[in-house]
Length: 55
Image (cartoon, rainbow, N blue to C red; front, side, top):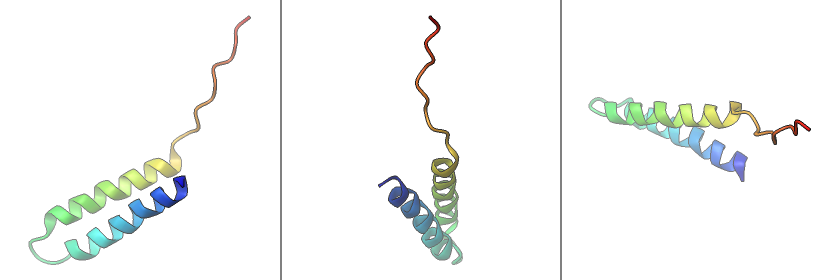
């Protein structure tokens, strides 16, 4: 499921870039950038590790 959501972010970014390339659709380019950044964040975020006991 995690990979599906990440893939959807990238597909949405590509779609926004395509539509945003038309004159007057600058907002869609910005949305594409945000979607792409969210996708890359999901790819590179680290896994949460449980705390190490100190005793």
